[in-house]
Length: 135
Image (cartoon, rainbow, N blue to C red; front, side):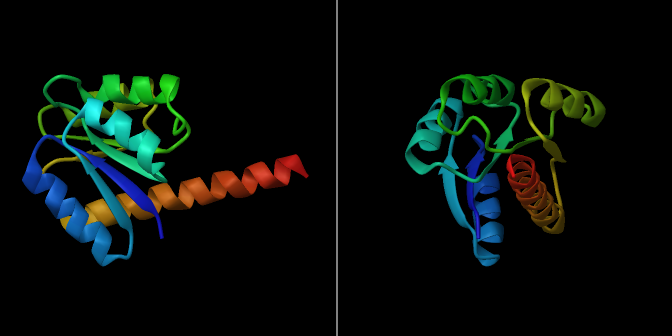
């Protein structure tokens, strides 16, 4: 199973995602904001990250840019989530900052689980492709 970092300033959202992902056997690390998440990436080395867009202090886009530039976890797939942005605009901005997927809030629990499955499948496919190309 995967180690998932959930970054969101809204505690009920963090706890909901923790419960969902742990139910499926994943290890979950929580962070309430970007600065805490940067530290968590170095300490925990998550397999994938789900981050809110709108957070005080450091928005999710800035967090992802910093993650890609300055951490050991720079290749970890990231999905963004937001309730406050237009979904098409949020998807575009997410892609531009280096995120690989997007989850609109509010979300049905099944959608969050599908997101993680999709991200893990892409990650495994990428690893398999990398091994084939190295051969």
